[in-house]
Length: 319
Image 1: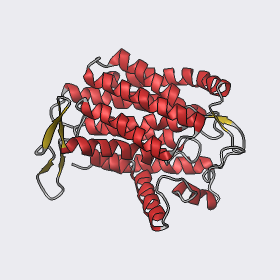
Image 2 (image 1 turned 30 degrees about the horizontal axis):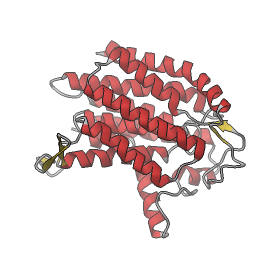
Image 3 (image 1 turned 45 degrees about the vertical axis):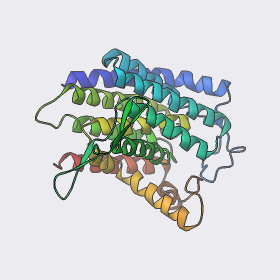
Image 4 (image 1 turned 180 degrees about the vertical axis):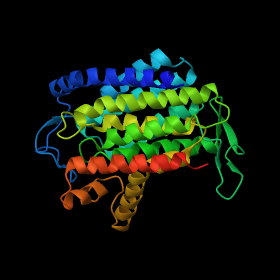
């Protein structure tokens, strides 16, 4: 199994390494940049103009590796189509700073594309015993069977997209978390007595995500040459999808992304209790608090990666 995972990983990594410098030039040419003098966001911590649009090389690397290594079935095509929509919305935001409400609506639309193609959550394991079945309630929409698990899958993908997007406050933070999370999910996909084609597909796709993220990370680690931008929400989208496809191992995904998850929950709760919209940014995220404690950007990124790795390894020991 190892070569079938490492080859897609390596190819996606090389594509990402090669395409990112071209994206940097492209972003500067078309003004897809983050200028701290004009971008009046409370979470801005950089001092110079840097290109955004990091989702472009990541997505192109994903697509090229998927074409080379994965079958061109309905699932693959829906992931590519929805992923393209994620990146398009992200590029528009990188250029025009769209309303967070409009972006959120776009997240729901993108998640719906893959869910209607069959990526859903039919059940989850009940910690108290047995399973929680989400296929009991269903109805037909445009000839497609929609279940409770379909809505749960949309909610999960949208949650991961936004939660991971909030974890890009310092250089290298977001793609590093994605690398670790994708590798752990890819390994978890193969932890079954009988390995099916779906398990292999999901594991290969997870390692492709990891490779594309790692290639981009080389240019995003402090001092960053390019920012992820909102287009890099493609990473959260892909992690949300593969965690569902890996035989519904949502608990593994929740654990490996435990620090961003807890940070996102505290952020939403804090903003609501302060009578503010949970969609509008501030400087109350964990990475901002660590910066206030004089930790460097590199130290904070390494902290997030290390915690993801430790929690991910812990998740792999659980039944």
